[in-house]
Length: 101
Image (cartoon, rainbow, N blue to C red; front, side, top):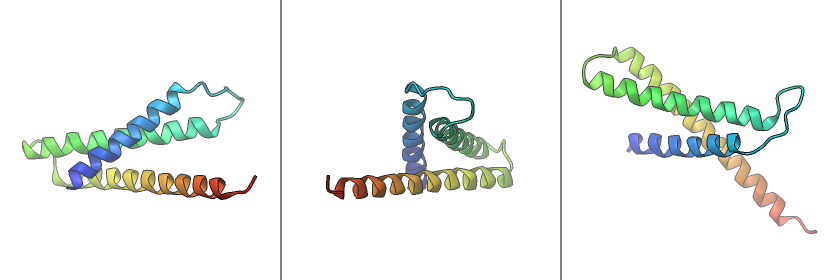
């Protein structure tokens, strides 16, 4: 069940990263919010992929348990962060949609 949640979260983060990088964000002197979201999404996807790779290596006896646990915990933090950001975005959208024009 946790593996399915990781895969779903990874797919969501990958979709977010693809959409953010596909959009043509105007380049400014400093880093903008879209770029930051792209980096965060890509970092989350890489954490999920690393966790999955190490888990499979551990099943074959090729990875130490401590490393696997650390990778899975990092992936879980990434997933929880993505879910929290999604929830905040949905709540903000609902607040905006309730505003009278």
